[in-house]
Amino acid sequence: MKHGKRPTRRHKEILAAKNLKPNNWLIVKNLDDRLEVVHKETGNTKTINLGGNE
Image (cartoon, rainbow, N blue to C red; front, side, top):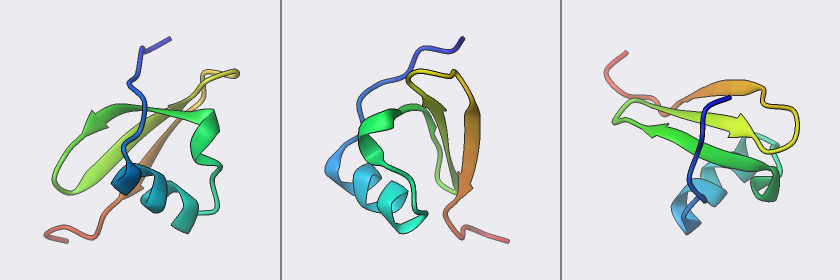
């Protein structure tokens, strides 16, 4: 399981906009075009596209 960091306020807003509970997710990668998060309990990973250069 990847170890993540606690989300910042901006990350929490992004997670809430994607209908995810920010308290259950940790930030693994914070890139310009995407955000990779891991669930605290299950270890599932998700990639959230931030609408970069696509």
